[in-house]
Length: 290
Image (cartoon, rainbow, N blue to C red):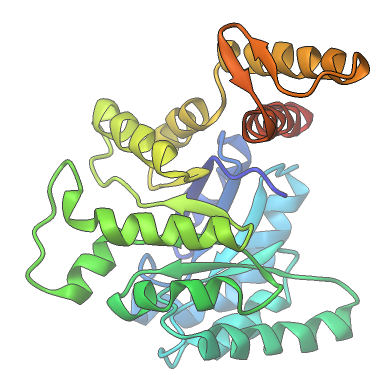
């Protein structure tokens, strides 16, 4: 499974922002043909996409690279998908998924391109509407191209109507939790809502810590600084890693000695704690190998 602690997005029509992706700390970078690119510039952005991606690859981009296409209901959607499939990206992002059929239709298009090009594409799905939240469990299991779901709080709040956004995000807590739970049930990555206060590091860090506690793996970032903060929050601390390794060593010794449940530093250790420790160590090893 990929590591996506930080998911940095920039508009496709802002060439100078996209061209700096190789300098950024993000695990995943996204060229945005959707909300970030005005309607009048979408066609030109599609035409420039192949060269834009080739330039990023030639400059040694190490992060995973995606293109966010317009929503399935948009007249730009199929044109975006076609253009994206002709570039050297890792996958596409589909925003505002509300039904399984929308995901499967786009996945079918990708499958045709995969056969022609002898390669594979991944999909990250955006859950940003009330209907999408209600259907998120079915969407999460709908297609094997899907590797992650992200929760878009601002679009969700707009879709619901009358919802006031607050710093604590209590108003979206149910929807936010439901997206994370569906992603985890389907063994997908879960990417949390963005924070629009780009100069407020404390606000971002607090929101990211809440997301980690809810089970999210990473965060949508709208500014390069946020990517650095997200990487820190979603990377297990030195103490967490050290303790997990000690626990696994103790369990390995107990297994050799024929002991089942063990007492480790005052905790009764059984299967769930062992699996959690294994996940922490594996995640750090994946980060360090990138």
